[in-house]
Amino acid sequence: MASALHNLSGYDPAKVPDGSGWTIGVVVSEWNDEVTGALLAGVCDTLQKHGVEKGSIIVKTVPGSFELVYASAAMIEDTCVDAVIALGCVIRGDTPHFDYICQGVTQGLTELNARADVPVIYGLLTCDNMQQAQDRCGGACGNKGVECAVAALKMIAFRKEL
Ligand code: DLZ
Image 1 (tube, helix red, strand yellow):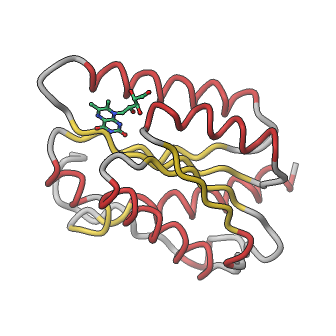
Image 2 (spheres, protein in one colour; image 1 turned 90 degrees about the vertical axis):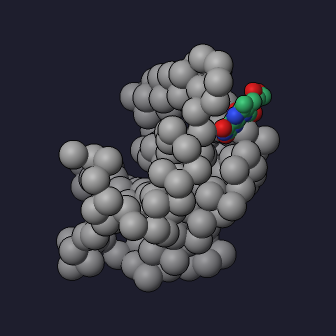
């Protein structure tokens, strides 16, 4: 079950394409920034481990997760990135707001992913509480940023191989 405290970020480094010469855009939500900052660190560490130069990682922040869709689209339109990684963390509150944000961002990134020329990687944590988020940004369940970086490199390779 996904909620079990298993590290979900393990991967085989030999199966990750070399990212030398590739440029990656990362859009990061400021909401819950202790979590999104840790996700970003996971992304940057992993990309550099697989050959992406530090200067080839373009990081832009946005106020909240809802802005990730616009920011991802703008990043694709205005830069020459090979992939965009969207990082956010939404924590459930007392109202249905959580559901609207999660649905909006998920739907928006899904639609963008289907029509954009470059892959968009989904790095949105949707958590019932802060503990779940901390478990997934470098805690017991790993770091979703690592998964996103690996997914970005694999999707860039996929695109370039076509
Ligand atoms: C307003 C809001 C709330 C209540 N919670 C979160 C959250 O848990 N995580 C997050 O990334 N953003 C949150 N936001 C801000 C919205 O994403 C958005 O920035 C505002 O509604 C302005 O469009």
